[in-house]
Length: 263
Image (cartoon, rainbow, N blue to C red; front, side, top):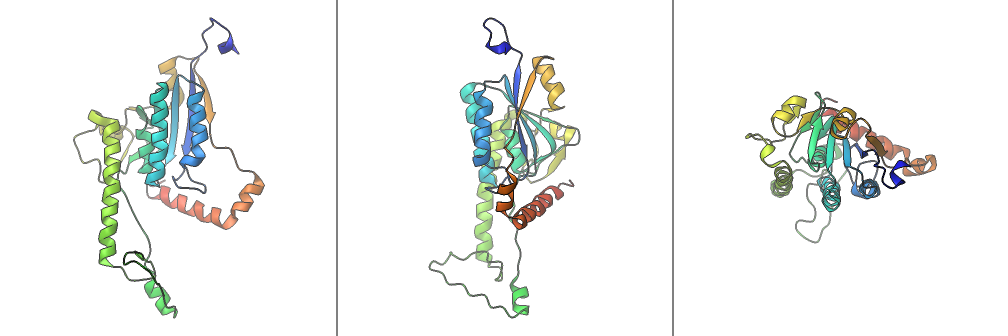
């Protein structure tokens, strides 16, 4: 109530947004549609700062860009500083989100970086041939059927894919360079490599080693208050309607994404 009483200064307030999981459109992942109301609410409350608590191995470059752009737009419009606190990992798209902050704080064991783009799949043409399955595809347009996992690789398809990946990679590099500027070390930081804790700070990909509460108390004093915002939990009926099998597959994919960083 104190902040509504005239002439009495309220305690500093920090809005905390948890960004936990793989970044993906729809489903269980982090995406702009799900996070938009939370991010808007955080800035609308006019806090002294917004803290992003990030634990993400990355995912969709488009969703990473949309979420990061929304955070930056609101931060600039309302002149509110943003701090990113990395837990286990902020890699690939997860680091894209961290770079949207004005300062990045990591744990001594946090994994950050992986500034690159990846596309993966399977080749199942021998498998279906062994089982007597014939693949039939009919298209109008010479480039309509590309990278079909049930057909042998086409060198032209691979070259087209590489061009697309390079374009996305260039956008990723531009984002990091525009956000981190002269803080970045004079080294190749964009080859997909990862760094841990203090080394990440040394490379200019993070600013400090620390944790949310003590860092914010040092910034705003011991009376700083925290308001944690996160996506609302789905009801049991809603979760069941989404499909147990699909959720199980999503869980496996998410664990695989974390596993590539030893987590």
